View 1 (tube, rainbow, N blue to C red):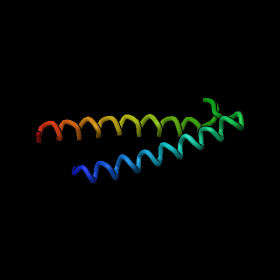
View 2 (tube, rainbow, N blue to C red; view 1 turned 90 degrees about the vertical axis):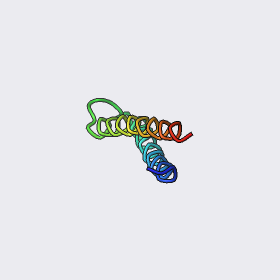
View 3 (cartoon, rainbow, N blue to C red; view 1 turned 120 degrees about the horizontal axis):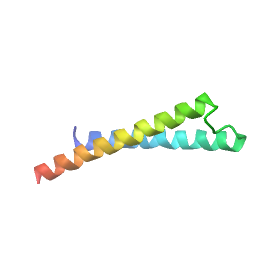
Length: 69
């Protein structure tokens, strides 16, 4: 993965995380952001997946940059 590809991927994930945050806020304002709401559970699972993936990809990119220097 090139640095430009990494940036594009992280930007895309950040945008999706922002959408998740907005949807979660809307659910909270409606009083339905809880474990009884399958849509909330799905959002939280997607959030967890994206943040874990972001961390893994960033660690790999940093390792590649350290290896090249």
